[in-house]
Image (cartoon, rainbow, N blue to C red):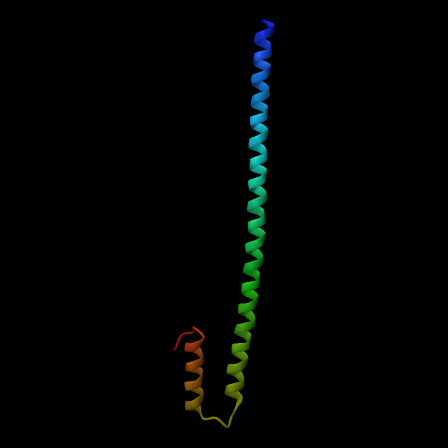
Amino acid sequence: MSKSKTLSILSDLKQIIKIQEKIIKKQESERKQVHALWIHYTEKSIEGWSWYGKYYRAYKNLIETIREMKALDNEFLEELEQVLRIKNGGSNE
């Protein structure tokens, strides 16, 4: 094999290696971005469910308190519960 052909092959191999290194760096960057997005949206999801849980417990406590008020009549309680369910996105069963 001639020296110029060997140098040409060596040059080609160096270029191939550079291209592969760029591809690897780009893939690593994409993985880091996807991981960062995953963490971000996981935290947002946890915050959302935490808020929903607090809201739901407060709603249930309010309904229980209203039911415990014996001075109010049944018809008023049912009407109030229906209004609260409708206003807060619940069913009106």
